[in-house]
Image (cartoon, rainbow, N blue to C red; front, side, top):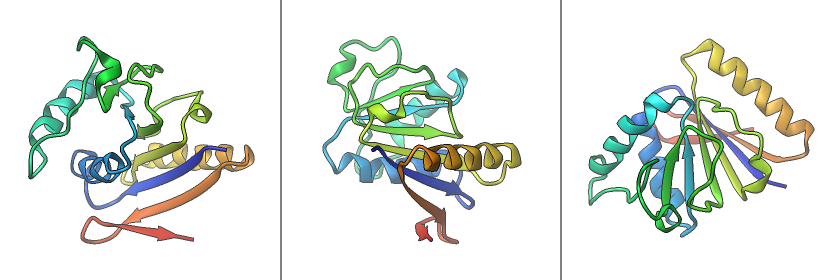
Length: 149
């Protein structure tokens, strides 16, 4: 079964929290697919990932870039996996039917949006009913992560 982790954003917005999570995910050496919930978010997030890292940038690609399979990180809003990623990061419960094809799925969602929280709870229940291994993390006051029971 796929390991599913929920990251409940309450203090830092996605553009600040995603680079923190991405840094950790890249340490595994596995390829990562980041699926945004809207195509309009892909380019701004891509631009952000080129400049937000303290000691460099996050090497990544988006639609239109060549050699997708060579990129360690790929941003999309589609149900594709052009870089053959093993880790999937879904933002604001972006819709994806094939999460079982990834070893790890991280769902990052905005805890300040009631509709998104409702959808996240529905997804949690769906994953649980399917027998996935679930973990829930909530942001602390300083923007770090605390595992909740």
